[in-house]
Amino acid sequence: MEPIYTHGIQVAERLQQALGGFEKSLLFMTWIGDPRASFFIYFPITYFLNRKIGISVLWITALTEWLNLVFKSILFGERPFWWIHESGVYDEHQMPKLKQFFCSCETGPGSPSGHAMITGAAWWLIMTSLSTCIFNRTRSSLAKNIPVVLYIVLLLAIGISRIFILAHFPHQVVAGIITGAVLGFLLGQYIPENIKFIQYVVTSILLLLSGMCLYWGLHYFGVNVSWTILLATKWCARPEWIRLDTAPFSSLNRDAGTILGLGIGLCSPLYASTQGWKMTWKVKAVCIALSVLIIEIMDRVPLPKYSTILFYALFYLKNAFVPILVTAIIPWLVHSIFLIQPTRKQK
Image (cartoon, rainbow, N blue to C red; front, side, top):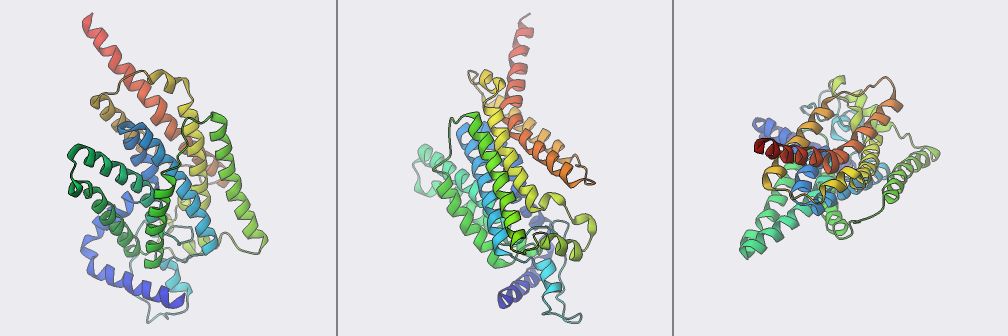
């Protein structure tokens, strides 16, 4: 793998030299490709525009992130920002002139790219749905391919940004894009609908148990499962850039919590009470704005790091609350406000 990694470092060095003036744009592309965006932004938007597509996006995102965690755990992919120091290929005088960024220092293994794989899977469903909608309205084969072009261009931009910030090697990005598109195609055809609450609970538990079994299985065979956290901590340019929410177990808690929260939301009385209400475009816009705003505020609240167990427990609960908020609380709240106001005016 050394020649592949070395070539990847050369590509990253050229990108930083050629695209240094577009640093902010590339950091923005990394942000929109962050798996958290699929949970916290793309899910609320798609849910209120089309309930079925929104739920499918959340399922695909959670399952794809879980699979990404499994792949990363068994492939042991390096990350550029630590590999250049640990590989022994470069001495102090030959060290490539590469710059780290606040989002470079992720603490999990690098292959395949989660940004490319998870976002690619979620966007696949959005892209195909949008393409079908455009064709049904215009009957234009040319117009229906616009979402396809945007899908490809944006994923390539995300991939370039991940190489640029030293989070991934090029082959990890390519693997992520291909795997994400394949999973988006496959999983999009088998999204569970109208399932019982107990099935959400069981799925959430199975996701957690499978991750823990993988962890202890690797530990049993002598693998130091914390090797990436140690390397990231050692070679990150600034200690404050190390974030516990990028650790593999954080992703596992996010996926399991999201599935449980989706079950609670869809099976709640609040959700049932809103099903007879018609959602106008005005109501949808308000629901989207409120959901994204509240989720963003909630995500900015720091979780305690003095206890790892407490951090993961709160992280699980925070991510479980997101689909409850989107599917039940926000629609009920907005509909109640819109229904009350006309009555008061008539008085």
